[in-house]
Image 1: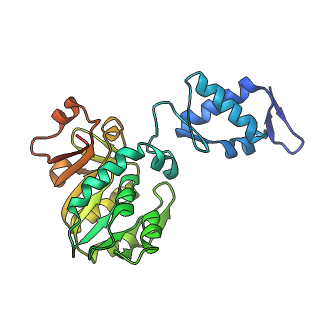
Image 2: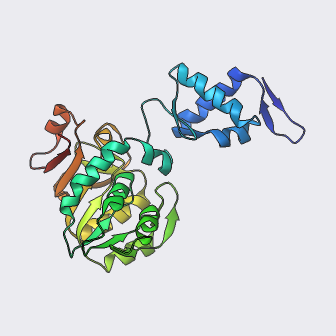
Image 3: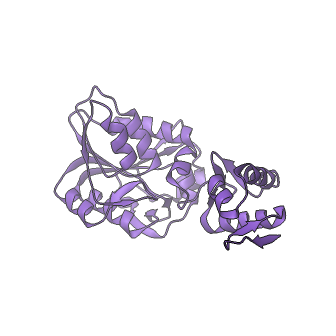
Length: 265
């Protein structure tokens, strides 16, 4: 049952009631954190983990480090760290294939995303490359290395994407030029790439506007995910790099002329 403590705090003493509340929150956000649930529901984190394990045994949640997801994986609204863990092998394979577009002496733009972060991790230190990015994790990673050169773009910090956005970011992009922009997306549709927020889309479009070439890095699961805000059509993308799980039907659905590169396939 649900009881109210002296301070007005709700305490979920009944496991069925507590698990129903966990599922309600999961339906709203796509992800729940075990420590946050313990604090909110006034029970121990160990109790919450038992609840999550029971729900996982019933097929109602998918366990991940620190919490649980809706079954079937992450959503664009899941925390950045959770999205970074999902399909990590595929993302690394995509990043390895994308290295062919990083030419010595070039300036490249790196979008804020979990697959583009893998590309940042793999960038070799022996190439004369300059990276322009608004991604805080990418800045942190590249800033600890002597090479490549790094131009970090500031602005309003947007926690869901772990990146900077807003007018200052867009204005800074407009003063630059990049040879190749590595684009990330939250979902892919028949017409092109989509993301979760107008703030994110504005920065992506600004990068596309200053790039000689645009390379989309997205694992094949993005072809099954939806996001509300359009970024660009496939005609604005010079190459699309994905993983071998892309189906024949998904390949056929891409517009004619789309340059598709498949990692491991």
